[in-house]
Length: 71
Image (tube, rainbow, N blue to C red; front, side, top):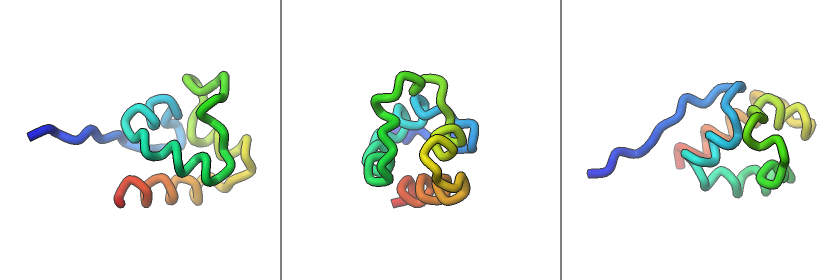
């Protein structure tokens, strides 16, 4: 039986790491008009930076990410 990878998601989680473990989250980011997938800073940008750069409340984005993962 294959163990599913888990990631402790915080405001400081880097997007590249997030998408590597949970590739399905790319759809959520695109749905929120967050084109982080093509961003030059993808390797270093955190969830907090993404929220700030796109005018989204951090807690709202974190909740959406966690809800999507639980599906």
